[in-house]
Each structure stands twice: as structure tokens, then as C-alpha cells.
Image 1 (tube, rainbow, N blue to C red):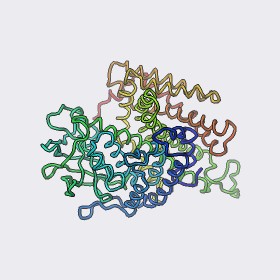
Image 2 (tube, helix red, strand yellow):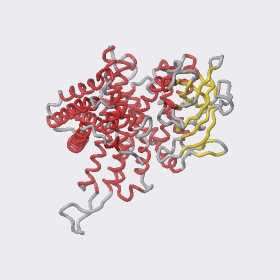
Image 3 (spheres, rainbow, N blue to C red):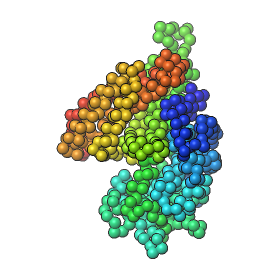
Image 4 (cartoon, one colour):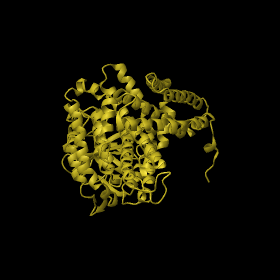
Length: 586
């Protein structure tokens, strides 16, 4: 593996080139100016900036989180410099077409490069990542005037972006937001309301901030159908300060380097805002940003899982303690704890979770490129549908299981693991936010079971299963794994039908989280089989050195220790259990 404790470069190279075949993408017209040398240079630059600019203040930003001084948000030294370096290197617009001011890389390559920053310092990385998502939303839904006004300064680091969805009284229930946008004769709106949990909502890191705010225009339909999307810049075109006020800072257990805010819009009559997209079409537009962010959250979780594993592995290889079985005489030399079977178990589990999460995120990134650039309409539509089905899994599975990897990293370090002398406890705290970020685990579960599994008559789920079965058709050299995965696919089909035949949506959706966990593990097993086939194709079934040996060990672990977890879960789901429904909280 790479000597870096941030990410494993050899794994990224394997995923991009040997598995996902980005060379094929580089032959398509949108990416024709790039080649393998470009990809390698981008990854090298990302590693360099992440190592030199992001990682050094990761601990400092965690210890001295953003605070207020004379009404301004103060962050530790190094954050501004890191974001400036990120912007100057072109990473904010890495996947934005060159014609629109970006670098024009495949989304798959850009996402792999950005993982370096998430692993090095996820708190600082959050600022430009939100800006990238805002840029992509504006390019998709903004007017030419809005794009001209805000996208160039976002790409060069003069402005940042936020998503303003939640409110103190509404949380994730966006139908209940009360922020309103009152139209004016000049085509602008006056935004009045309060938004909560706004990452990057106020700071001095960029001269301007463009808030993308969900609000309701008076007279619109009730619920989510009445939500519009309004862009509210902190500073207006003439340089005057908009009516947006910082009402307070939220203090979190992780991502402490990212300022998190409570914002009041319209304390002095109304913040000037501009409609993005159609009236009452705000939620659909915002989902463009949210779905990108959801895959990004899963990638961030995987990146933290990988870096935690690399730190734990390094510690285990250098920390001597105890003696080998059969050599317990005190005169026998102590051995590295990496040689103890239970430590091996914990390291292998971390590797299995983290590398599956990273691969899943990059696979979904490849689907983004397919839906945008595939040569025919049918291929684009298939990619878009498969991405839609996989998004809740790509967000939630790494957020759950790469957090478990971080937990094991702490365990490997023993008493040192839960001290601040080592960074693994911070990785855990940072990652604990990801099961909540961009839609909680339960929301993703309801989305998967209640919508994605049955949309278009079940076409999305059918496409996922047929895609997995196409992998099984190539897995002659791994009959044990292929048979286990085929059995799991049969269970997915049967259980999905059983849950939706229950006749009671409460019973169906009460089991959604277990369904997400089970299907997520099936998908992760598929991702491991895909990686195993790519290792075989590259190195042969009997060779490949330590890298290939590690991949095969992790795949074997997942199929023998992890995939079997799903059997009892499917059994429980098939029983249409009502335990949670029957309990009255008192």
C-alpha cells in the first residue's frame, strides 16, 4: 500500500483504472483533452495539497472549533490557506465542463481526487464541497444571469455556497418549513424566516456566500409542493450587506472545523433573494444538490474509514505487546499486535468495510458519468435509474459501516485509541455525523423501500438485481461467492414483495431500516465480488502480490462473516414483525 496514512493511492489507481475503466471515459468527447497522465497528475496534486494544506490543521480545528469574536466567525489558521489552495488548483470545478469555467474531468476522477481532502480534514473540506454542489445546482437550474453572477466567483474561491433546508421546528420534515419568499415587482423576493444546521453559513473564508434557501411563496400549494428555491447572497451586487443575520453557532461532536449556524433571514424587512428554477419547484431543484451531497457524504464516510484503518494498521505493525501462541515464556520476544488473530480480525473488518464503501462511492460516480456522457439514450437512462436506486445505499451503508470501522480502529489502539494523543477518536466523532447528514439513516431507508424499490413498477430494483447477476455470470472462478450472492438476491426479491404485500404501509415502513441494512450488505458483497474479478483480471488468480492478497482476504471476510448477517434480517422482515409499532413510548 501507499505509505500515506491519509488514503491508499494504489487502491485508488486500482479502482479507477483496473475496475472502473476510466480510460473508456477519456475517449468520450467531453473528456478527450485528458489522458492517463492527467488522471495521475490530478491524484498526485490532490494528495500533495491534502497532505500539506489540509491535514496539518485537522487536530487544531477540532480542538479550537469556530467561535465568535466581535460578531465575526473565527477559525484556526490554515483553513483559509487550504481552501485557497484547493480553489487555485481547480478542484472546486474539477468536474465542471471547461466551457463553463471548470476543469472538465470525469466525475469519477474528480470524486476520487476529492476523497484525499475528506480523509485529510473533513471539516475544512466541507466548505469547498458545498460550494461545488451549489455550482452544479446553479448550472442545472439557474438562469444565465444567475450563473454569470455567482458561478465564476464560486469557482475561483471568491464566493462559497450553502444549502439552507432545515428549520428549528421542522428538522427533516421539509413540508413544515415556514420560511417565506414574498415576490416584488422587480422580480426579486424578500425572504423571511430562520434556518438551522447550516454548514458554512457564516465565515470570513470567502468574500461572499450564496445561500440556497428553501422557502414558500405565499399562495402556493401546501406541503412540499409549495416549496421554492431562492438564492440569497450575503452581499448584493452593489456591495451592500443583505438582510441575513447570524443568530448563533451550533457545537457538534465531529466536523468541528466546519462552522455550523443558525441564520435569520429578514430581521430588517426581508433578505433580497432570486428565484432559482420554477416557482414551487424548489424541492426538485434542491434534490440535485442533495443527491450529489448524499453520495459525497458516503464517500466522506468511506474516506474516514480508510484513513482510520491505515492509522490502525500502522500502529498494529509497530506496537509490540504480548507473545505468540506457543511462545508465552517471558523470555520470548514480544510481537507486533498485528500478529495477534483478534487484531487481524479487527483490521480485516475495517478494510472490508472501508474499501467497499470507497468502491461503492466511485461506482456511483461512474454512473454519473454514464448518465451524462454515455453514447446512447438507453445507456444514459439505465445509468440514471441505477444511480437513483443506489443513492440511499451509497449514502447510508458507508455511513454506518465505516463508522464501525472507526470504532474498530479505536479498539486496535486499545487505551491509546480513546485518547486525543492519537487521531482515531476524532475520525470516529467526525464519522458519527454522517448517518445524520443529508437525510438520516431512517429517511434513506424509507426512500429505498418506500420509493426506489417500487418506482416505475419495480424497474429500478429489477435493474439493480440484473446488474448484480451479470457479475455472477462472470464469476466462474468463485462459485462459493456467486452462489451465496445469488441466494441473497432471491431473498431481496422475495422480501421486497412480502413487505409491499403487507397491506399496511406502517408495517412495511417500520421495517425499512432493517431492509436498508440487509440490501446494503448484499450490494457491498457484490462490490467485493466486482473488485475480486478485477484483481483476477489484472494479476491472475494465483498472483498479484500483497495488494491482491489483501483484496482477496477482505472479499473472503465479507462473504464469510458479513453477508451471512443478512439471513436473519430477511427472516425478520419476512415475518412482518410489529414489535416497534406495538410499543407505546411512555
